Image 1: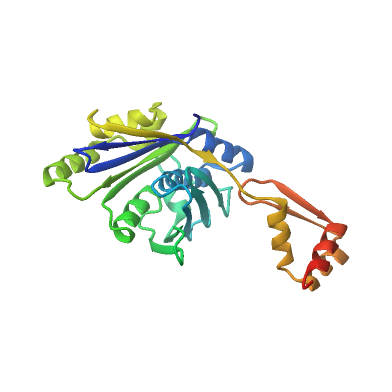
Image 2: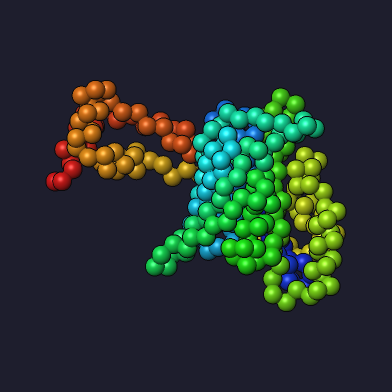
Length: 289
């Protein structure tokens, strides 16, 4: 599997760990949209945590993440379910550097809020939000889990680059403390996290998902499952046709008379859909029938 997640327990099954490798997924998104380093760093981290979070719910539950910062990358949107994700970013052409030459994602994202909407097939989708506390995505989701879901957690996310600013590796982890964790084990985990290598460093050094789990647990863990992760867009001609129908007859005929056709590009996969004059007329004529 090119992109995958592994789940494990440690500390007498009172700590749950998810570790994911998303290198090919993030690399493909960078290539498809010709994204610059800060933009793909921000989107790649959000795609990774979105993929992990989608595996913490039931297979048919959906999650929608919006990172709404005031930085130059603009809004980040990631949707996912059952390990399948898709995402987009307002501005793909941002490259900011820190003083040490590393990619500056914090200033790229800026201040604002994170909103998470979960469709758990209840009467209404569940929505929660929290402020962006740092802008590096990992710290922000650590804070989100503690504040909005009341789960003590730690999130590590990273995207590493080649010398020519192409994605070299991507991945991350989510650690969650469950009820019953002893104070002794919690202190041990906290001390370990203080000395843990940065996630970007681990994936840059070629760690796989189980290597990350080993690093976190010092090798004392129980591996539960391995799951494939995918970048998958569900756009279609019919979906965009329905979207055009919502414009109404008057606006559709304006498009027909002015441009004679309409081309729509999917923000999530860059696929183009063309509606010629005949197709637009058919859509307009179908309204209110």
